[in-house]
Image 1 (cartoon, one colour):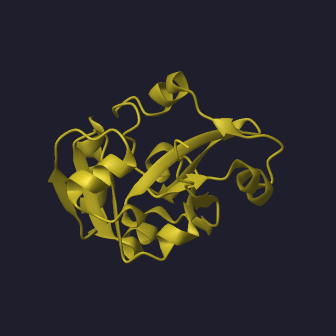
Image 2 (cartoon, helix red, strand yellow):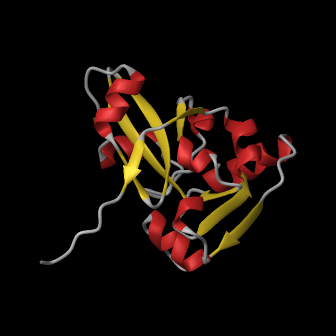
Length: 162
């Protein structure tokens, strides 16, 4: 079953209030925010890391970056690295590469939600493709996923050409 259908079934079985939209292809969380006309802070970026022999799902707003020093400290990991594209393909075979939803519970993975995103009223995220997006209240998302809310991200630094 494709992830989008699996996600619809999961949300329906849990009587979740959500909407789904389809937009032109967007490959990054910031592009998704742009095509959906949403603030970057409401769009979830799903990052999978490998640390201490297991995978962890970290969910941060599109306008923030994962702080690996904070990840290692907060999660008590001796090391942490981004999952490779090959690993992501194996972990999420029903998703387009980089379009996995922040629903680690559908994959037996612990989810860590950045505290900045937890404070937002609404959340939007990829639904397995670079075109499908789910929108729901952050409270609803947290009730479905039961993420650990922690501070694991930092503001993205703007790079200037000078």
